[in-house]
Length: 212
Image 1 (tube, rainbow, N blue to C red):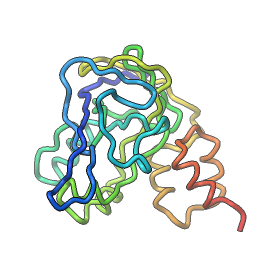
Image 2: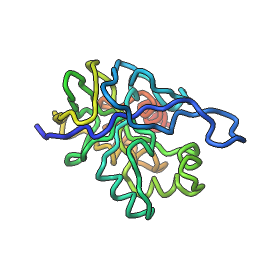
Image 3: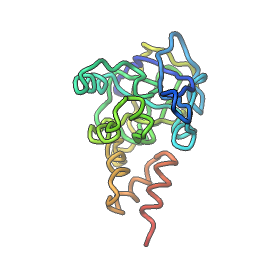
Image 4: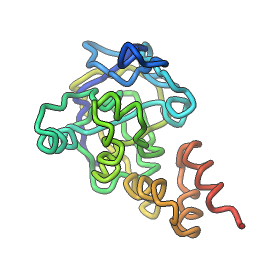
């Protein structure tokens, strides 16, 4: 089992990114002191503005790594703190080729990776860069959504470990590339559907792999 540490637990409240914003979002996450309950639909007290594309049992928790933040800090030329990309859990690092189906346990909480995060206009607005969707896509550092297999409390500093899923299942980065690639091979899409991927990704891949 691969060790990993929970660096930060982050939650957000609904707010408008600018006074002119028509909708409210919970993308701005801030580290929480102490323990936070994580149930089957995410962190208790965390807000989600767009339930069509975020949240739900298959996207209950979003994870991002401190190593990727270090890369972004160098790339953007400014500090990037935990919660900046809207993740609930900032972890110390990714293991080799994290995949859909990999399980991560922190204390009693067990998470199963399901899908990459897909960049959107809200992320670009939050970052103050209209090109950030493209920059995020090209960086291929999407982080990962997870479903909660076992609920419990989470707190920063808690050590955890990874139990890998089936080695034949696609990695999170591969799934990210497949989502973005409109010409992705049908056989790859069908193979990906054998993995325990999230419902949003599953529906998109089913639609694109259907016989014409």
